[in-house]
Image 1 (cartoon, rainbow, N blue to C red):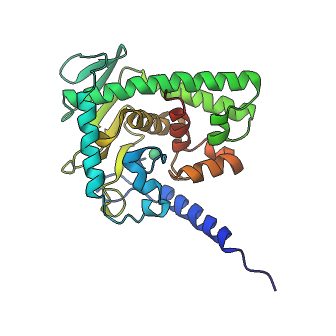
Image 2 (image 1 turned 90 degrees about the vertical axis):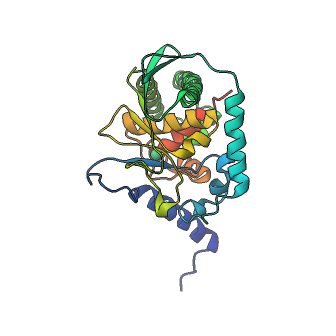
Length: 285
Ligand SMILES: [Zn+2]
């Protein structure tokens, strides 16, 4: 008689199944999209070090079955983060017309109702994203030349393989090119907006999303404005990777699963938006 699988194995399979289900299942609750339209949402599971999202990330099962208790403690934390951001020095940013603004010498656009503070927050995140991308691409060049994976690469993309390293590097270069294309537009969705994505079961935990038919548009949801600048930078990298590198969220957002796939299935890891996001975050100073 065959021995039953140890419970631990079942547990892993359950988590993997959950992640796959999260990734494959379409975003819910937003009526009016053509079914063929690519629409990729980013839910709020983040690295455990990111305090705003600690709740979901500490409990991967909670990502698809939230308690609905976005606790008052967290709400207060979010408000204090917003207060901190508002009190920080304004980065190098200027207006360029009614809907345009300039960050690091590049034009960006916003759709109502992103005000001046919102543009400052976006500008700060873009500057950080530039730094993350520059350092990530430097790391990838060095890996390619030395044929040796860095610790960060190994953690998120697996063992050294020339073809894969080159692919990841090409993708990061495409992400940077999109960020710098001078056409990128940010749309702020509120709960009343027709395109607001309430998330799975109305959890309201979608941070941002993009779709293939709007290749220069990044849709920002209310949670985005509660993120810290480096999280927002990572969100931009995540979303833009969908647009330019055909990444998906099939492996989910959970740190442990992302690493597990880098280790055992690097071909999948290099197709996953969150692996790019987390790898880039390793280069935040
Ligand atoms: Zn995504």
